[in-house]
Amino acid sequence: MCLLRIRQVVRKAIALQLSLEPPTFYITATNTDESTCNDNDATITTSVIGGQAEYTYYLEGPITTTVGPTSDVSYTFTALTPGTYTTYVVDDRECTSNEVMLSISDKTTDFSISLSVTEVSCLVLMMDP
Image (cartoon, rainbow, N blue to C red; front, side, top):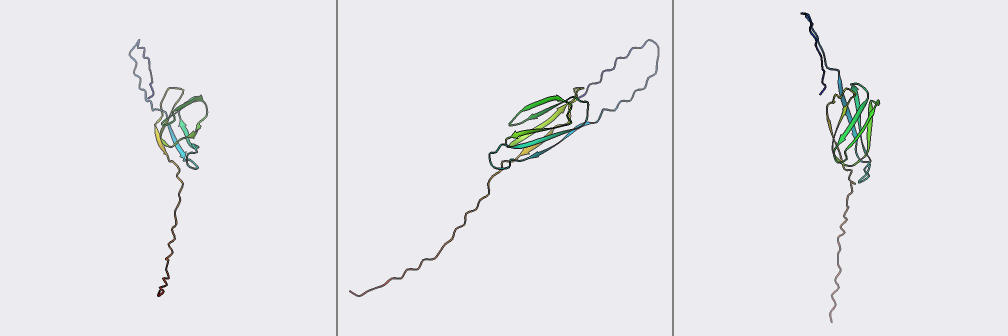
């Protein structure tokens, strides 16, 4: 949440109309899953729209980390394990972006088993003793 502090000093009766719109500041985020089972090579890329540089990038989940401050408008968290993560950014004015929640899937190996059944026939020879 951004805080805007206005100090007003009134010495005479002055009419003042002030209209403020909050700056546009939000993030988008995308992820890649593990390439193969237990590689822990998944990524989350967080991109900033608006706000005021310097940015601090936050990632919370099975792996929690903070990066910044940096003027970069995009950051990729790497070497992530499967699980649910939340990412957000705080800018130089201490405004906090929206949060984005992403899930990284555990890559499992698909395999199949093929069974082949062959009928066996037995030839029984009976002999008279």
